[in-house]
Image 1 (cartoon, rainbow over the protein chains, first blue to last red):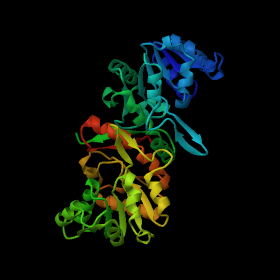
Image 2: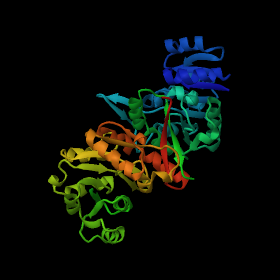
Image 3: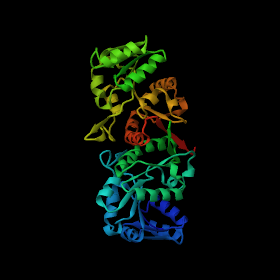
Image 4: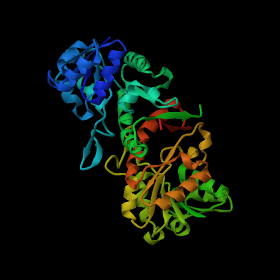
Length: 217
Length: 217
């Protein structure tokens, strides 16, 4: 499969690198074609790896992964030709967090979400929100954390969620640990997990953790 | 120990009933002295149970539990003589949720929390936020859910958090499953868990679930 991964930060490089290892072709997209992090990544990641602009990456990918920060996701996607998203699965792993005056802040929050913003802006894309609830190393290697811990998917398109669940399986997430929360509106709920995730990360002193849902039945 | 439980809804009656079973004296507080739910609860709950106004309950309790909805918590507490909260542990188990036009909404959210509002309004109370992340039946009987699932405490007063952790132990929560998130500001994080809790409750079809933090170390 050909993947576009938008974003050259740690999340994008980690996801892109693992996709290449799994045998996929990956074009890492950034604002400029000569982004040093992307060029360096492409040279090191293997034969399936390339770098380009956001638009070049989206044109290349059969599936598009949004791995830029949630607050700049729309700006990154607006650099893409809309027809290069039409009908494609668009995997949004982002969180709209920023530190403002020393405090973690989320925006949008509660009455909207990045997942919904993207789906509204690109109604022909098949947006699936997933993986934003864990650190990027756990995203592609859930075995770093013991136990039957969970990850979420939500989105309007059931087939797209099935396809993303299969991709999560390639990363090491068994299908029974992938919890489908319904439509893209549930992106609000998973994005609002972040403040608790941050508090736990500070408490534990590392990011190799996740939540496991335990239930009576 | 003498407990004031403010709120005659399911949360207040469940917490109050369990505290009486555990041998404590409990006064259930409501806006009016003759609240039918409170009077009925006091008649049925046993010898240690009584009912009264918010002010009468707070004057009675050595520990005060806020079990009214988060959006009306300050209004309930303003009915109390402030000196009846001075130096007392004030356990806040509330969530500021409401359904508006068919949607779950939280207010305050993200830049503030009910826990912080209460602590600001009553600086001499020793506010501890806890238990708001689970259904009230799970609060007092964590064995309803299998596994080593977790509950959180946060607040400014370390001794108060120790006292609340001991109370949680009476309810059946071993101390090593109680995660201290630090100061009362972390109430934002645990209150923002609610949208995900609601989504999971709808998915599972019941409220007998909780999260277990799994971590590498």
